[in-house]
Figure (cartoon, rainbow, N blue to C red):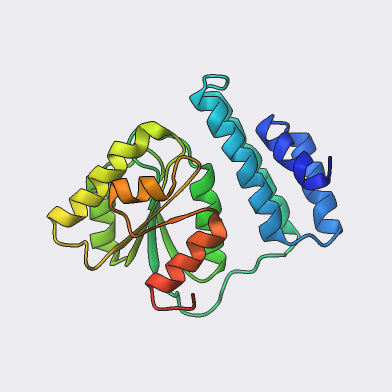
Length: 214
């Protein structure tokens, strides 16, 4: 088993010491930080599936989130990421939909958006459609990103998009979805503009939607 596969497994098994050791080794070996984060994301997908299958409980999601925070602290300490010092490319509202209490994927996207030059309004987890709407209005954000890890979030995703349509903001705000429970079919079901397979995808869509580089 190579280091990448070991990292995915360690993250899925919630083995923090093993995760951090592997991340340190990969950084020393010159592995791209985004690749490391992608491996962590795949490990989070394992956590999400185990949660839905009731092999893990809420505590498992919380532990995985804490592990990721430690990973990001390690990456930041290595100075492989540096925040952009130029004017923000745009504003992005992020959150997990009503009923979804995970914030792992969302935190990854928030971090990469920040280091890519975006201003991020992070609403946290179990966000109501009205809260997404209010945040987009007050901040003037042109993009709303919603991260879903569980299938129970499908209806709240659709309700959130519908709320923007009812208020006449759908033409002004692009809505992108992401997370282990999201696919093209879910994107079409919810009526969103795009869905991302990983955090890098999300940054690319945010750039596209705000008129930046694709």
